[in-house]
Length: 382
Ligand SMILES: *[C@@H]1O[C@H](CO)[C@@H](O)[C@H](O)[C@H]1NC(C)=O
Ligand SMILES: *[C@@H]1O[C@H](CO)[C@@H](O)[C@H](O)[C@H]1NC(C)=O
Ligand SMILES: *[C@@H]1O[C@H](CO)[C@@H](O)[C@H](O)[C@H]1NC(C)=O
Ligand SMILES: *[C@@H]1O[C@H](CO)[C@@H](O)[C@H](O)[C@H]1NC(C)=O
Ligand SMILES: *[C@@H]1O[C@H](CO)[C@@H](O)[C@H](O)[C@H]1NC(C)=O
Image (cartoon, rainbow, N blue to C red; front, side):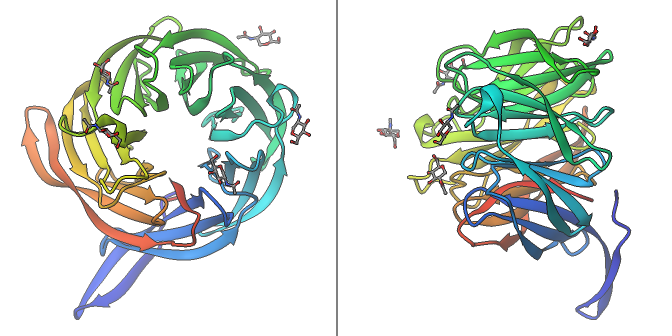
């Protein structure tokens, strides 16, 4: 999927070449739009290519395994959308349908696709508790709903993570309102899920929001929205379910007032050596948010917090960080309500007993998309 576009452009009389990387970002609120962007890794320039009308504002978008489709869910419009990716910078709506059965009238916060056959797709509802699995047609467009399931009456699932442990496809759910981490096993013939376990996150009001699973199947990382922390969970070697929290790191400085922040995101770098996590400042403050990067061992356990830097604005409803897929050093971050996408780059490279580390991360470029609804999350095409 790496873009082979190489552009040559004169800069101060010197010819500079760079690889162009493409990404899409959705709007969290109206107007319903999906934007295509490009980033030049030599000049660090970030530009908006084109804006497309979307089926609804999308709290979350994700690609299918082949990047021929984008799936989108909305916390307002109660619909699930499937778009065809018609070029590295363009999309068109293929299908949109409302949630049905026990999920009728629920609104969704997250959607993710399997990266191996049969490429099932999973969505989770928040604030109401509901999950759905979908089959896809030969082109990757969402086809049928295969299963619908609920959690507890007080649940509300905000984030999902998929992982394969010993040939078993597992689905992890971050139950924000229920303060639980759920593990389900996916039946690869039917697309139906079965609960493997549910684990408390260490108290009421911690609010696990999003999660990421290391591919070695031993660890799950959870960002706790209200506790403003990043927790590492151990997975059982037998069934892959989350069994124990082993360590927790604060995502804001000690001196900060916890109630003025709500942490947002956690994602792995492409080599899985670095783990990016973000905290947003609350919308009614003038604080800025924070980006933390953790150093991971090859088995996936967190060695240490490598750095924490302030973001440039409040972050409000977004601060969704999306590590580049082509380098461990870059990540794109979004802001709503200011409406922008900003590139951060790891900096201050040093060699230590653990290998390559970085001492800081700096914003290198930004593109404003101040249409009133941007920006939710970025997905990297190339
Ligand atoms: C979407 O939901 C949020 C949160 O409930 C609300 O503040 C916002 O006004 C809604 N937007 C629309 C267009 O319904
Ligand atoms: C879903 O919402 C619609 C519109 O508010 C309402 O008419 C309908 O009864 C709801 N259905 C269920 C199953 O709650
Ligand atoms: C998947 O579901 C089918 C049909 O119910 C069943 O026969 C099969 O044993 C299930 N597979 C697993 C691994 O549970
Ligand atoms: C966050 O979690 C830690 C560890 O469980 C706990 O000590 C702390 O009181 C929590 N902080 C807040 C603000 O809830
Ligand atoms: C923390 O922030 C909240 C909300 O802004 C405020 O009500 C509270 O007084 C603050 N607490 C302290 C100790 O400053």
